[in-house]
Amino acid sequence: MSFNDVTARIQQRIDSQVRAVTIGVFSSVIKMTPVDTGRAKGNWQCTIGSPANGENEQSDPEGAMRQTVPNDAGHKVYLTNNVPYIQTLEYGHSTQAPSGMVRVSIDRFAEVV
Image 1 (cartoon, one colour):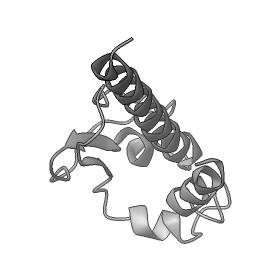
Image 2 (cartoon, one colour):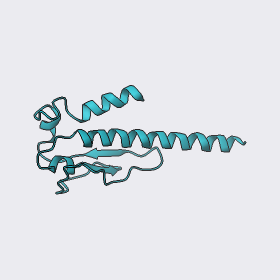
Image 3 (cartoon, helix red, strand yellow):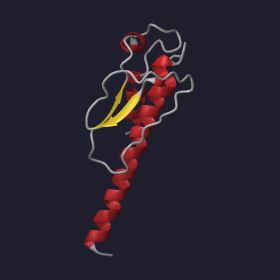
């Protein structure tokens, strides 16, 4: 096995782990988002390079992650929600997620990583 082969295998593992953690954190945030109409849960937008602007006008009580996360590491990937009340939800307005969604998900995955 050559040095290049070893390097390629290591890079594949890094890519795989970064993608898995990104999907895990993003999925956790989306799943933990409180649901009334599904508007907040449906407005999580995953983008590469820069955060999403505006709302996407989707209501999704189930919270499916529709966007794809890059297969390789090294990209800036954003999970954005632009509904006007998302910060209020994050800081305990809903009894469904009194400790928020983003902070809890990041803390949970920080322990794993």
